Picture 1 (cartoon, rainbow, N blue to C red):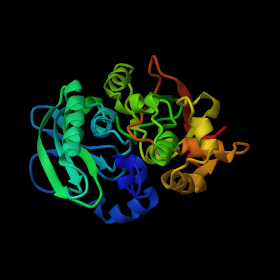
Picture 2: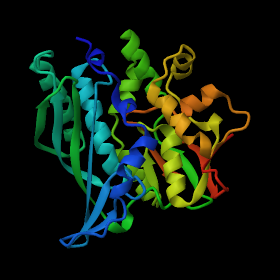
Picture 3: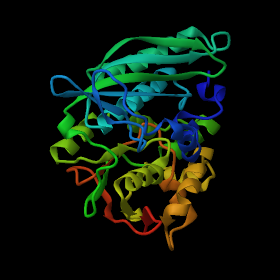
Length: 329
């Protein structure tokens, strides 16, 4: 059974568009903190990847949740991808995942529960690879299948990577190639399986996070549904800088450009590009190149302000230019 045919979108490409989402949560920002244990270090203000709370004893808790509709037809692989994607938010903050709970929505009268078991098995296997406990979760009967995890991790509050800590002069490092979104769109439309995309999506960002922390990075995010340009816009805006991307230095999965040329572009990718256009300077850069840079990724890599050995540098942060957070050249 082709799981992707039971969903209107696939993976992180089915996120609520970033502009719409920001308007929805605008009223939740800036409230006085409640009485109780813990100090909120990273919250909703800049749309970071996870919440971080300092607790007694000198450590911090990292909390996040992520789930989405099927991005591939294989149930086990979908579970692996969704788990790696949820764990990624903890790694993007410089944390270590400790425990996760499953989030499962399933059309129980349409799809066999044996497939749901395969999804959960995939998630469990990736969590085990990460050294993260999986302890139960929650499920609902839903017309559209969805799966993900709520993950809690720990971090050193003095070594958090956050999206508002970028400074001019820092290089930009990307730890996974782009192109996942267009290849997933082609898979959904044709059934073709792209092993390189599955391998990229199921690769944990654990090693990249550790390497970034070792290199002294304090600013990072992961590249998922809002695409490289969308997540980089949020980082640059939060940090009060402008990000310059060298398009020729950005790595792509094999077949990504040909797939884009064949017309396999998700609506989420187009919405990402539309969202950043007002803040983008890209003289002489073609529309196809910009669509690839805005491609809605699922379980993408880390985008780090700083040089991380072993990964490509794709640009740099410079002083803020009036009205421009992104420059593509």
